[in-house]
Length: 405
Picture 1 (cartoon, one colour):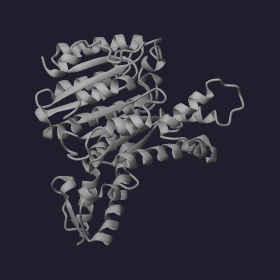
Picture 2 (cartoon, helix red, strand yellow):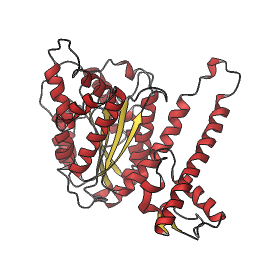
Picture 3 (tube, helix red, strand yellow):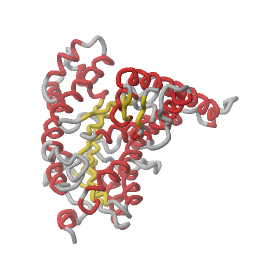
Picture 4 (cartoon, helix red, strand yellow):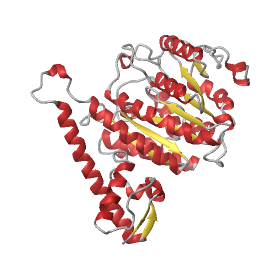
């Protein structure tokens, strides 16, 4: 039995010692079937965790990487579709021959926890290091971080409303882990759901004249999540809810990034393209490889998000929506390549020669999260054919040296 087994030998162990109280959000209709916004989130997670673990685990003792999901839910939807825990456990099984992914899933709700614990027990039977923990995320955080010492950590924070406090995120998760060795044992990344619906709902309390006995506590909780009450004036100054969400999200991300010394990537997630933002998915990473890998994951996930919005075959449409989808994707591809070409040409004017790897932001300006490395290669090859660069686009994209011809 390892040191981790001694502490977590029971998959249903509660580390907090707290009174768990009433079930929270376990009967939510969200878990009946997967909505489009969840499809995007899960596709990103599914496509990013394996590259992350593969890369940072290369430098970790015994190839061990730790994954924490602080708001795990039941693990699967009621229709059997995998939720984030099921997806990650599948990834852990796929990597088992070359990486050890230790998975910690925290869930507060009683019904959700029972389903989650069953899923984790099945994973343990397959030989995976997986643990279901019941209670509040904050109560388990210190113990999980202690078990993660000496290994890279990826934390997925996906609450229904407000999640961990600003201090828990910046001081406990990031602050407890050294900033050195960013690709090694102390590599730390967080994928966070910054809930736009919660911002709108709580911000509305600032202008509401209705009697609400919970108003002071709710506003204080928002202060704690944002790292101060700065967001209140931002909300009041915004012309509408949509702009308030955008400004507060930007302010929150900027404050976290400055505090922990990281880069960040924010993705606005909607159930449909014309809907208002449901939440912003934010990656905090301290290494440029994280930005590249996440960009690839987001681009591929967005394809599946768009595909999920296709009309079903039962609608009796006169044309095949798949054909239309493929045509639209090709149009998008050509638009992305044109945008990247323009970005590269501007870089060539300024620098004359540059390494692609060092200029992600400039190259992907205007198409970040949509285009990916294959589109950069296509743009470079077009410029080469036109005699505008000596680089022929052959080789690893990030290692291409693009020079002005």
